[in-house]
Length: 312
Image 1: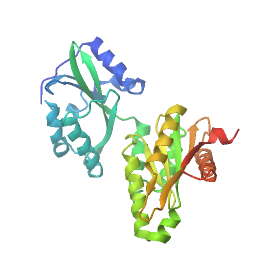
Image 2: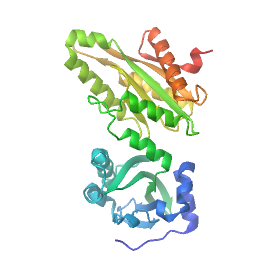
Image 3: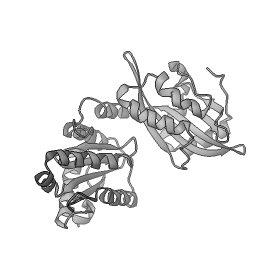
Image 4: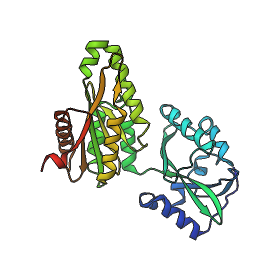
């Protein structure tokens, strides 16, 4: 284990500010976080603070390239190994060069001891050096419950997303957590024609392809579940800006605009709600999102509608 390389309080406060309000409270106790700063030029560890990793006997990577070894050394829940490996391999290669936050949630599990940890990164300048800050932070209790619902056994066998029961439980937790979120319901247009024309095997492949393409553009906090044959519900955590929600809804329409052999077009009808303005409980949000999706379908599909627009 490397010796602790401290960071002065002024610089630490500035980095905390960069990571945002929602993470600030977890910096109150060293046991809740570990912050590592890596020099961009050579990937060497310059400083670290906090004891979350060391308290669990986890070695802090001395270089960015060492992150490629993490999944083989840390007790990460097997169900999450694939996403963790992709994230840490990308990090080891210096690929996370965006200015916005990149996130990963991992479950560290050793016997009966479990700890959900969010890993996030951000670029910054410190003492005239360009650094990549990597923050490991212990998740709060409410989010632990949500993650357990997500990564439990309640998944759809075909697509790997949540099933309907798990989606509704997660929705119930999100609509009562005091935060503002966006919810999307998408229905694949002309899906019955796919099954009738090409058979159910092709239909299943269409569903898997739609899920895969959308998942690539979702964050680790976001939730996606299959609630019907060709219907999917998406919860966008902590997204309250309509402009952002509209950009995402439009992107989903574009991503799911596919053409199958023979010229059969696949598109989606998308309904959008924002909480708490469009509802303050799971039943209201789900019902209103469904109404917005039906409105989009009535427009001919391949479009999106906000519930706030159709209720006027």
